[in-house]
Length: 447
Image (cartoon, rainbow, N blue to C red; front, side, top):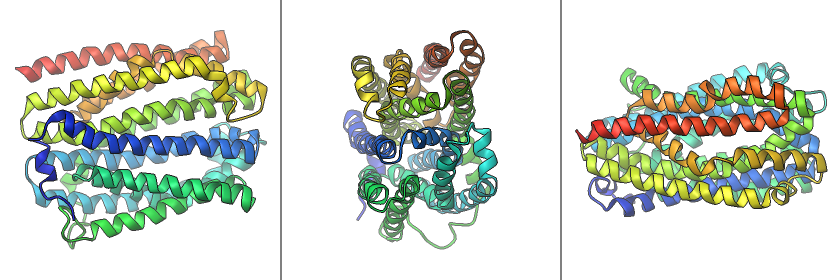
């Protein structure tokens, strides 16, 4: 049974203890999910071949597009849920849960129908060659066929976390990882399903865990639970969720454009191997990004609840602690990658050219990572307190306003190196902007 006082403790319990309680499960879950993505790529690289890894790199924009719509619902509604619980508006909290289910079914279904009907042209547009298209198509066809389940899984996990159940949200993620790690080698090496096996493992694991999530929210003893009358879409809930979730939506949408540009420039200057190298770099870069995202997920309900309850000293304290931990995490990533980039890249592929390109990319992309954690926390903080506009500005500055012009200019002069350098320079400039906006906000907050 759920602890009925869990949401109320967000406004009274020690901030450090709360952040550990909420962030550690999310960090463990995110780390597990990232490690799965890494091992998944290793299985594909050694079990299917480097062409499959190259094809996997082509699918990133489409996967990010799906994630963009999912995050607009999940991230927006979870923040809204935390704020409403801080205001002790429990009736609206239950309606938010029902609306999350309805929105994910609608959004996930529409996106799946559209992409499946136009999958090959979409993948061609994203840079698929004759060699990589079959692998990218087989992988994404299965993933998009199960897109509704994917959206529901992520949406309900966000609800679990924000309703005072970070441990259950962590358990759900770990279950999907464990099931994946069992099914992936079985389908690829045992059944010889190739890259299709990897996609099947992903969807099956999410469906199984989704059944467990439905079981949890069907318990009437839970703080929020499924009940009649909560599934009808409410205009205010939908608009508020979308407005708050607009920042992560635009961030993911921007990443579609960015990855499209990166793949185009890498294809132009490094061929399919360049795209494959970025697939490797992206997996490793996101390992540390996802850890900080887990930290942010732990910060979000604490900051949102206390902001809604007007406990501003507690809001500032959780922000400071989150920035400190994020900096430590990203600094560790910087040290590991700078020391062992080639050895780590060689885990994914035996191809010498791909290893060389990936190692170069890792050195550049991790260059300012010790500062990136601060920028990520600042972005999530603005979203957590319902100030979507500033969150959107910070999201877009790093991935659009600064990075796109750099990607259009630098690769023309420096080739593949220009692609990697564009991302590092964008990181640095976005950190400066985050510092300015957060300083202004904290001064207003103190007044």
